[in-house]
Structure formats: C-alpha cells, structure tokens
Image (cartoon, one colour):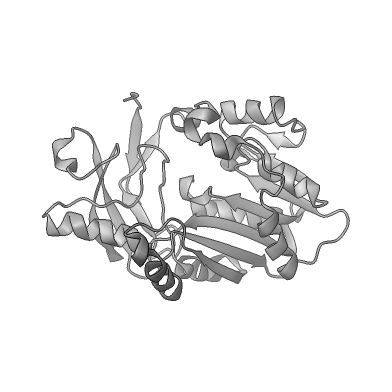
Length: 303
C-alpha cells in the first residue's frame, strides 16, 4: 500500500445544506483499503461515515485530505480506468447531449466546460456536437495523456484543480461534472464557482453516486447482522477516492442556498447483483424506489 500523508479536518456542517454536523447519523466506519467480508481482520485507518438527516448527504468525518492531490490521482490512466474506458467510442457522451438538447436548445457558438476532463473524451464529444469546449484536469498523467494521445489543445485544457481555476463570469452555456463532484473536498464551493462561470439560463450536468443505492444498503445490512460496525459507503482513502454520496434532496437544498433550480434528475440503476432470474425484479424495484447506483442531476442557473 502506498504511503500517503493526510491531515484530518472535522466538518462542522453538511456541505450541501449547511445543517450542523451534530444533526447527522453515524452509519459506521470505512477502512483505508478494500474491506471485504472481514474488515476487522485488516490493519489500517478508519474514519466515521455520516449521513445528514436533512438532505441525506453521506460524507466522512473527519475528512482525510492528502498532503498532495497527486497522491490520489497522479497515476497513469491505465491504472485508474479500465482499458474499455480508455478506448474512445464515437458515441461517447452523445446520449447525455441528447438529453441536454431537450432542456437547453443548441445554438451556434455555444461554449462548454468539462470539470475533471480526464483524458479529454467528453471535450472531444462536445466539440463533435458543435460546442467550443474547454476543460480542467488536476491529474498530471491524465492531463498529459489528453494532450499527447487525444490531441486536446493545451490552450483549452488547464492542468489545475477547480479551486485554483479561473474563467470569466457568465462565460459558458454548459458545464459538466462527470463522476467528479464526489471526489471534491468542497462540492458546495465547486458548484458556486461553476455557477459564476455559467451564463444565466445555462445548465450544469452532475453525475454522482446515490446515497440511497440499494446494494450499499444490502451490503451494510450484512455487516450489521454479523455485528461489524463497518459500512461499504465511500472510499476516501483508496480508489476510487469517493468522499460523498448524494440524494436529490442534497441538490434541492443546495439550490436554495446558491440560487439555481433543479431542471431534471435521473436515477441510473447501474450493475444489478444476484441470481439471474431475480435481476429484472430487483432492477424494477430500484427504478421505482429511486435506489439506483448513480444520480444524473441537471441544474439551471436562474436568470
């Protein structure tokens, strides 16, 4: 296991709704490695995992923050993503853009920003649909791969964290956080900053883990009945380094604080586990109850 130096900060409030952290439920503990069935037999560091009683946001308390962000993400893309993900598909992100077009009619000259651009696949996809596309990517290896392999313009892709990024106000028509917000230490601040860069009426698309995921609840129940105070939620100190899980209410509450509206929310089921003959029934239940793996949230900046 790689040695990483952390500082631990104790959140005083829920990051998305600003409710006191005293109003949060302790779900259990999360180890700094994959836990398996017997986490109590593994040596490591654990943090408490909390769930806000008001908006349902799940987060670690204390929050482990690495001394250098490259300790988490400064790895070759091949070590972080699957080979399939790194293979470019001409249809990549086009389904998202089809949905976007129903809530934000496309016009010539529209500008888009991909926050957490990775190797540049989404930037390329948006360019293909006519956007003037920009991006920010904090991982040095991912940034270099985007420039050298995907041919991204270094004038349009910044090797920087969102906290240090700077763009003109009211500059973009569309901003996307694709599987990114759960990795950021201050999602609320990141949303506020993105809103300042967004034109009035513009859209922000955010894909995040669902804190009500059916299988996480099931796995946690297995831990509970076997009298282990561990949970499967989050992975703040090991890949994929998830710091938060969200609910629709997380964004509805945050909208009240930051002056945007929730234009659309989708519940994506993701992978379904269990006997083959039961999977279609489990999937139907997950869809009906809103307990899919991922949420796709579309935010609109108020005029």
